[in-house]
Amino acid sequence: MTTDILIEHRRDIADLKQRIKNRRLQVLGLFGTPIVLAVVLLVWAGLKISFWLHSDTPSAINNILGGVVAFLVLSVIVQLVAEFSEDFDVWRDRKTSVRELNLQLSLAEERHILEARRRTPPSMDRQASYKERLPGEIARLRYESQHYRRVHLLMQWLLFVSSSAISAVTAWYDPPQPAKGVLIGLGFTVTVITAAAGYFKPRERAFNLQQTADSIEQHATALELGIAPYNAMEEASNLELFATTVEGLRADQRMREQQLDQPQQGQQHVI
Picture 1 (tube, rainbow, N blue to C red):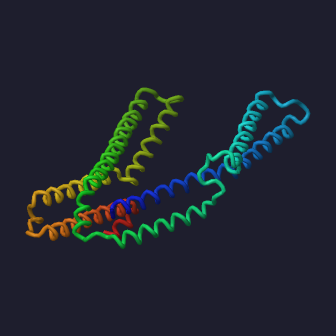
Picture 2 (cartoon, rainbow, N blue to C red):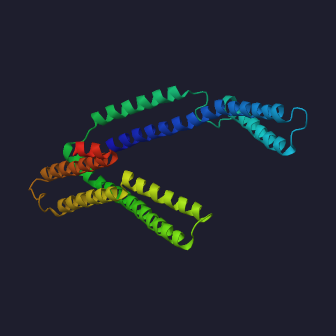
């Protein structure tokens, strides 16, 4: 019963967040489309006055701008009907401000916090459920590690190919054009890739994420098998130690990510 109630609160919060996103897009369309329409009309009139004041505007320009104006006018009409017409219930939150929806979201989050506080399960149950959530966390860490590893490999291959191509083009041509343009482009590519690899450090990020995932999986396996350091007689002690250790590993991972995001002098200061 407690789980169902908390899940329902989470669904309400997620639904309100999506409604807020939709409502912002609706409001943007309601106010933005007429502005765009006015700008297009001003541009059309400005072109006519500036270039074709005493002659006919080219038909291609008239057709293009006329089509854009017709589309924008139709969009304004459709949005106004969806917002104000009582016969069409297309928009769920029509005539509702984003501010009001944000207030509903704040109240829903407050109700969720109060309900969760009132129905909080014992610490041992929370620690057990924490253990069950870890496979998803391990999968996420490994996915991000593979992503950064692929980025690093792609950068390295582009760097290898571009560097080799510079020498090859220089040897093949004694350039004038177009080889000069090719050399400039290849040199630019090498510079950008080298700078990006040094700044974003995908190899280091991949290594840190994989190391954290392996460490968490090692502790999860030790807890599952009941081996050291999770070989105490009481399951509650093992779960508490496990949760503390894993949170420490995740905190270390966040610290390493922060160090990688900082400039070199900042990293030395943090270390």
